[in-house]
Length: 283
Image 1 (cartoon, one colour):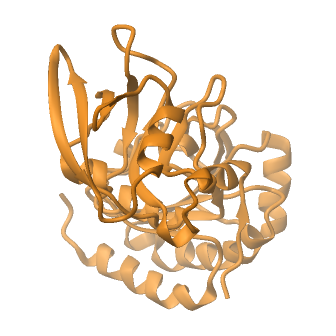
Image 2 (cartoon, one colour):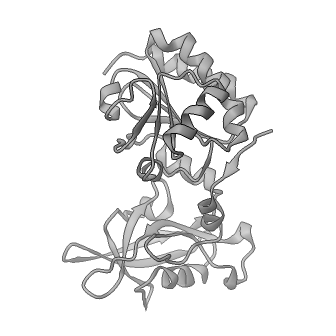
């Protein structure tokens, strides 16, 4: 059985956000108003911010790797101006237009890429769950760097580049997260068992340093380092929307696995992956 504590954004994500003030819209899945069941919602796979280009369109903040949009060629910073013949200027417009179609439908997108208009045909897919979206987006991709972390314990690397040549486990956790408490002993055991072979376990929370320090002791976290991310910048870069979320990163800095929540049945599988990655040659 998997245990996990979802953040507030997870619920919003599953409901196909419209634009939020000062935030972004994850227009991956489309509206309830279209009358589709959850299993039949079509998925595009893009995040939008509130910025517009040249007074029209909506800017792609992020195209999810492996999504229909990504596979068709949509990239970050493109400006979506039309779906079929309908002009779009807000994330809500995209939700409405995509929501008129089902999985497997082919829709034509018109994008501005610089000064050039590009037309792409996108085959929509069935909406995956949020965990699968994260895995699609991150596994096989270079891990984002981190910045602005404050030390809770241990020598916190300035960035991931300092750990090149080592296998890294990043554990995103919180002081109030029961599942994080349950997963910490195994990660601590791996740090002790494999640290000398090149494994670095790094814990990242957004809780204040005093609270994080107390909880880390209570959880028995004896990682290489624990840090707090008060601005949420690093968690946002990694797409973390539920806790705990654990990333396994190889010696080249590429994400090789993502695990959301606590599932003791996955521990043997993850440990085997760590051992394989430790055996790989240094870059």
